Length: 481
Image (tube, rainbow, N blue to C red; front, top):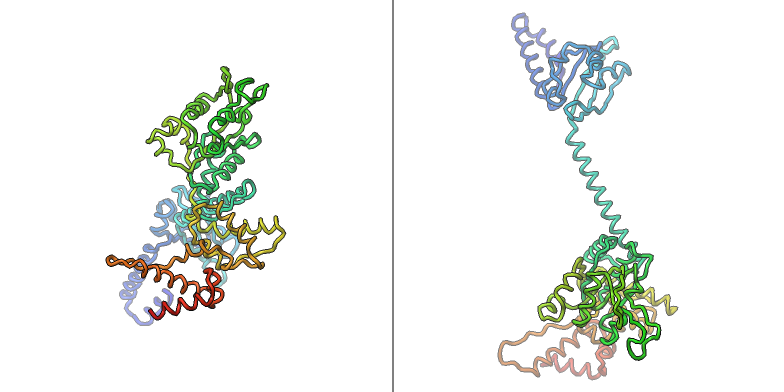
């Protein structure tokens, strides 16, 4: 695209009629005005002395400054009157070079100002052309992005903090999203002096979460006492919890004894398997929650106690309430903040790191240097773990002890565990059921799986507890049938 003055020169050469030349000049000026006025950016032009000679509509829309208030005026006076706070034009005249600044106007718009000098043939600045671009939305988007990044960082830091504190305090191993959410909730409620009810299957780690809540609470420098309500005989649990006065029953300490609630005063009591409490004990325990006081066995005096209760159960308390086996009022007193801990089978990502943790723990304790084959890990990840973390810990201990080499392989797995994972599919007929045929089909599939696993008869037979010759003979018979 060639310059406007080149077009004007060509008109002088091509047209001898002055009227036609003037008309075409007007057309060019009109086109130039249209280009300037329809520019997305604001345009502000001054002469070499900073006098305003042209301002387009976009400048007015972007800055909120009326063209009539600046046209023909000197930029120094405009700044002096406070119409704008800083001038790119004046900076160009001062520094003799292009400048770019950011400026905020009274209408709240933030703009990027780029001012460029126009140099004449003698090397003087004849004009300063300033482009003004609205970057308000861009800044807003940048701020939103920054806030999003900060939120992400805070969330990441929070998760990492939860994970690191879990490891530091209660040896909680967690990588799975579900478990991290449990820890996040536990940490949030820990400083709040509220009763907590931990729900989940046996072996999921309810005691570990209870300790985590305690260690992040305001009572962390006081006692943390655990009571397994299902392990203490019914005739002893009241004296264990509430204590007793001297001479209360045969065999009692002659001076009497404080119970767990008194001993833990100021601290936290973890009542595991709270669903096992008898209805009679539930009434007395309810008094502790409602009145913060206890009465010792054989006593009449109320004793004030300040304790936080963290209860846990693997039973469905709502069903027990419906069956009149658990008091409804006690259930609602306990269920202030329920926390459900998912079973291990729903926390697949936790299994590999738990395996590694238990293995390292046992290696250190027993002086071993055993490692575990990844095929074993894959099998253990797929297993349902009805006993949850407790079962996994025991399984790793068993594998460490029974394996004859430093590498724990699939051969070291218990047969019943492995077969439960590789159970072959057997088509069940809808009619004319032949049990003997089904059993043979199942046995064939099991033997085929074992052979695929070890790729040799000896190891496959050993794995299934069969003699190699029996293994071969049966497979051949099944293949012929």
